[in-house]
Amino acid sequence: MHKMKTLLWILGLSLILLPLMAFQEKQATLAAQVDTVLSNLIRQNVANQANSEEDPIAQQETFVDEIQSLIAKWQGSSLVGEG
Amino acid sequence: MDYVIDTWYHLGNDGKLVALAALMKDTDENIVQISTFSNGLWRNFTLGEEWAGGADSVNLDYGFIKDITNSDLYGSVVSREDKEINGNRMIVFSLTDVFKQPTVIAGYDTPIIEGVRRIAFEEQTGAILFVERILRDENGKERLVERIEFLLIEKLPSPPPDILGYLLEP
Image (cartoon, rainbow over all chains, first blue to last red):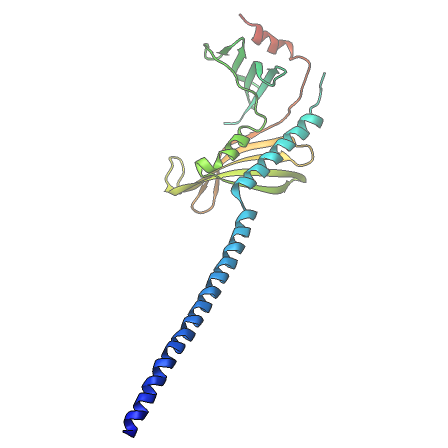
């Protein structure tokens, strides 16, 4: 009878503790996931910043602007013999 | 073969070509070819050919602005570098087309991996210095295909009589 009581206590405690442990595990997993998501977001953000610095369209526009201003400079000042 | 082309442009107020005369000479100043455009007619006096046609605006950028703008379409890589050659500081823009695989091209002993077009401007004045096309082989060696160096660009009230003569020839 004593053994039976002890067994029931253990069973009862297990039933209470198991969900708690599962809850704790779940919390830990969620926290890890949040960490991963956050670090991915940070990584993505850094990558986006790097990409925006080398945005090919922006780069093309910069080069085109520079060529146009070089030609304008030359047309404005360097043509010789103008009559 | 090296040659010098003396080209005279008569431009309208809108920058479009009204008339043109081009004299191609060898390095000994011998005329190799003469061609003109006026009144909507292109003529090659050397070959005795003529054909009707229009003329676009004269592009002082040698088409680079258009090619840079369309570089995404063609997969060209655009780059820019500052250079100093013989004390002359210049800005060089490049358009690089990387081949999908090394390609054997007649006349070259090593497979070619990319083609590069460059245009160079003098930093101080903005004057165009040269336009060139090269092929780069898989050893990284550059092979010059064509290079146009601008010897003189000037604006004058009228061309010399011989040039006018070609333009007025019936």
